[in-house]
Every structure is written in C-alpha cells, then in structure tokens.
Length: 69
Image (spheres, rainbow, N blue to C red):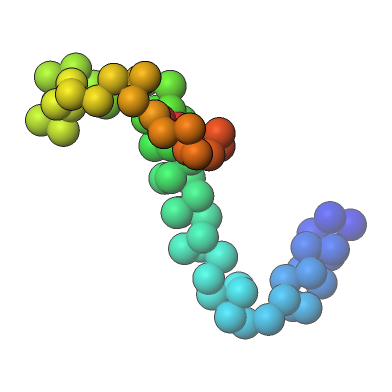
C-alpha cells in the first residue's frame, strides 16, 4: 500500500520538483549540521577565522533571535 501511494505521489509531482529534490536533500543535510555546529560550538579555537576580537556581548540589539551570533 505504501509503495503504491508513493508511486502515485511521485507521478503527480511536476518533473522540475522531482529533479530538484536530490539537490535540495543534499543542501539540507549539509547546511543543517553546519548551522548546528556553528550555533552551538562557534568557530573552533585556533582556526584562522577565529580572530577573537568579537565577543558575544558585541551583538547588535536588532540582531534576529533565530540567527546564531
């Protein structure tokens, strides 16, 4: 039953969406862990991108809550 339902949904989906779905899946599975890593761990110590000049208290008041700072 599930296979028949999946086949029916796949056939009803436009070709452009079916073609973009694998790319979207790769992007989501790559960006999600990276977003989580930088939101929870920040830049790793000793990394060339970590200058240490911008402390956490230097976040502007208008900064959106959903973006990690």
